[in-house]
Image (tube, rainbow, N blue to C red; front, side, top):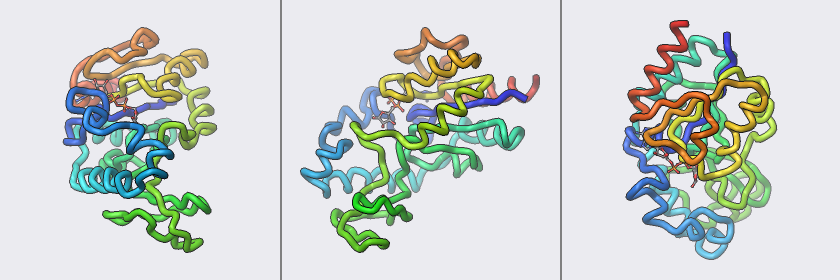
Length: 230
Ligand code: APR
């Protein structure tokens, strides 16, 4: 059985009603990255940042997985030790679809993090600036989101899994943000076959061996079906 690493981005959740970042009307057309997604922005105006993630948390809580999330969960169920999803998404739609091997490299909306002692706990639906950390009591709670200028989570484990992968797939990601955009190059260098599934060609499309363009809810189930039928 092939070892498969799947990188997902905002495009996989678009058909579940969650906005992407860089498409027309995307989140970064309406909000300034430096205001809501940097440590400096949080230091300047924590309530603005917390409110931004509160709104996204509420939206994600109401969202349901689509056929693409369901297909990936089915792939994992068919070969549990061989499938890893590395997601840049902070929603939990992979888990809602039944996936369990999921690494949230950019953090998660349903988690809160203490900026002082690194303790993590389940985020309330509405966080407030200055919320107390349940471990150290400091007014130092923050959304558990990896902001621009911070180091993504699980990088060592991801590097190891890319090294072992026979197949690397990127789904619904524009290839703008590193290190994730560099995973295709690393996986290929380690010998994996690489495939992009996206609505439109990403910035790194030329580095993939195979491409499937279209909405994730259509391309991903078809691709999974192909893998399960070989
Ligand atoms: N099916 C498949 N792909 C889609 C769909 C869809 N229904 N809708 C949009 N897409 C594609 C777009 O064509 C685009 O290439 O999804 C991609 C979304 O790109 P971005 O908005 O840049 O999202 P992503 O690549 O996940 O962003 C990476 O940037 O700001 C940060 O931390 C944030 O994790 C995020 C990171």
